[in-house]
Image (spheres, one colour):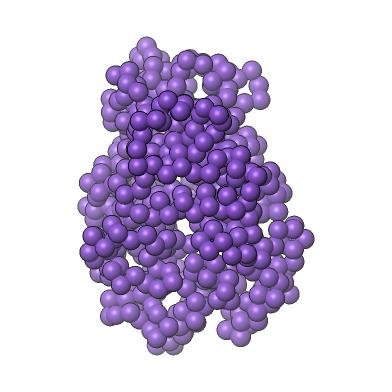
Length: 577
């Protein structure tokens, strides 16, 4: 589809020397390198960081998908910036982007024009950073995004089947930003602008000498990289500490010895942004379009999100295979209704918009506005999840604010339908006996009536409770209760909506017999699942740690793991047999 571009000059951040010269800039302050195509949209990290720094008055350029295999002209064309280079692999870890769960090379890349593969390297953060450090050794390199964030300390790398050290050590970067980077990257820019030290910035990690760390107090000493390599129990302990600290309100500083005189130091994060801060990020002047350099080219990831709006960040579900909380945080940070409606109004003015929002959601679409009833209780809590093993009594899981938001969106004149494409957590409105309250019931029926296009997609992930316990997911009896309510709704209103469940095979704890039982229960419930996802161990998750060590980091008990490629394939095939 042909895109209509704004007439306003300099609507996008520059990507070439010609575009920089058109702005009459003598020099750049920051240059961002990304493994994705440049899409000026708040769902793409490089665009967000670029706009945040632009709002600070800095001159920022983006170099998307630089060629690392030629004479490195993409890395040289803009010379060195005044403050720093920023590096990200893009919206995905480059290894997840490149390979299937069976380690087969993917034939496409949704974040590249025409979906073509091969436009970013394996371990992109490390490759890009090493090149920049070779060319410009005196210019600081800041790494961030998913790949850097989840590889900030020693981590299991499924694709090499080994423990890798922090990406800081591998790449030679000066500082790493983990999580959502608006707050730390602003502080980094301010300190570099005033020639101040980068030590101590919240939500960052650095490599320091023993002398630098000597004055630090109230820290936790993690097992070293070498200790983790030598003893799987040490690595399980290493992950347990990191996860526990990520789930408390006042986490401590973490130090991981690297070599005889060096350590990785991970500074505690900033508090979750409040509504005003989050609104400010989403209200930046995004065009919501791919850069004109991609004119008339199809970028699959953009097509998926161009008519979608994100309403919050964070997830308190704590699923053991998921990285959302490790990256975005456990606490929900929501946007204001005004900011959301303003962005939707912007979407409705897009020439291609036909009245249908593809998604009004977030990491878990129905966590919007949910917090602890008494914050002081939350501040003392160390649970990994607010929903597992049971729904926390201090959690305000009321859907009233979300229903009010849906109503406000539906009232907009150019909106015909606002679909909920993000996943929903049915354990927030149901238990084994039925709906938690009247608002929960109203939410579910409103969802089916107004926000589903014939098919409700849900992810129970498995049917066997011992596997679900390792996943930190609710009992399958809850899904059965949901199906009962779903079927009753269809009968009452005379509709034929479909329920489409998604599952994971070869997750730690899952056997071939468990997959047989799963398939049997699907037949009994007269459901036809369309997808079973073979478990992919990604860095910095509870499940990946179990996959590598064979131990549950919380209990140190042994867990069965299907590690061999043949066993993983058999589990997936068993589902369809």
